[in-house]
Image (cartoon, rainbow, N blue to C red; front, side):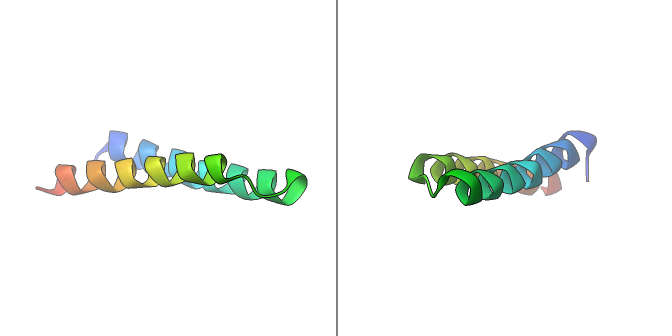
Length: 52
């Protein structure tokens, strides 16, 4: 896996942790989870594009 894809994957996992902590501390927020899902989909797209 290229370095840029690995870095993006790490950022996505950190974003998941941050969204979970935010939801536990302040209650669920749909916008936070929507933004994380967009980041996750972008990460999947980058990883898929790098493998081709």
